[in-house]
Length: 375
Image 1 (cartoon, one colour):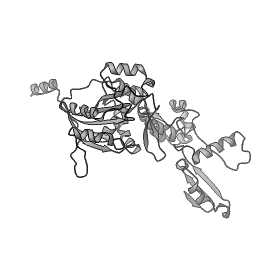
Image 2 (cartoon, rainbow, N blue to C red):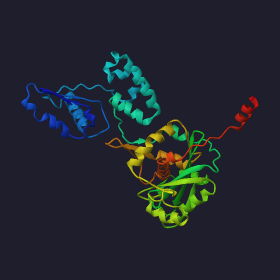
Image 3 (cartoon, rainbow, N blue to C red):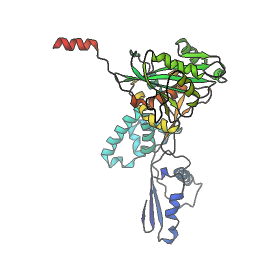
Image 4 (cartoon, rainbow, N blue to C red):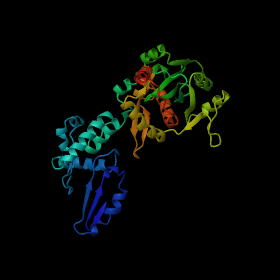
């Protein structure tokens, strides 16, 4: 914002949630000669804020609803999202393209990157084309990227890994898993405990559950709630095969598991005990924002392996990313009862501490033999 006698400039008002800052600099306008106000902005993610008010006012002026406005609205944008596919349309949102040739090169590069990354695509449409997404809630990954996780699981016995778990209700589903890093890939071995007494089970897609059950992805329980001892034992059993260096548990839900885990010898990391296996991770948008970019990279570059896991593909496809006004991200279920995402959230908890896990490399024996033969 710049003040020059009777002229006040506001830049990027898409970030303004209310008029507090605007009023501070315009309240004395009547005391200035030839007082003018200029607003310059791209579109943005904040809905029902200042920019949406001015967009509505502009529509009312253009359609004749407001007939006595002294405001000149000059809006450059695409008419719809589909038009972004043809670069010839971009001049609608960027009239200076004919003047600044390098701008077209920059935007073409941005567009190609945006096609591979959902968050960049959203940014390109919003900031470059002034077309915010109609639905600000977006899937975590494109379906083709989710399908690409169906890669062969490498030999992992004896490898180090990080565990994760999550549940929405102790009467419902509980997702667990182990995260590995090997040969440039990230491998997530997932398992799910399902309570047959869950009130939501009849709402879940039957075909998904039957297919996952046939692959051994599910442990069925008939107890009133999912016993924490059963979940703890799953990790103990896997410790016989893998080196589990940590188990990430949501801070909000950890209390249900701590005692059962400690009974089987798994200790809690604290300020005084920094060697325990149980790691309490923050819940909510702090963790979601922290891992979002990591997951976007893994999915987009197809370096993530779930194997042929019906439930993990289903879990991911049931999860959306909701942008928050402060720029953070939050993972939410697309539908609260019939579309579960416990396994995905367990995965995000493990991913939040993935920096503790070192990647291992396997030497290709055929390559080694040919190398030694050459020398």
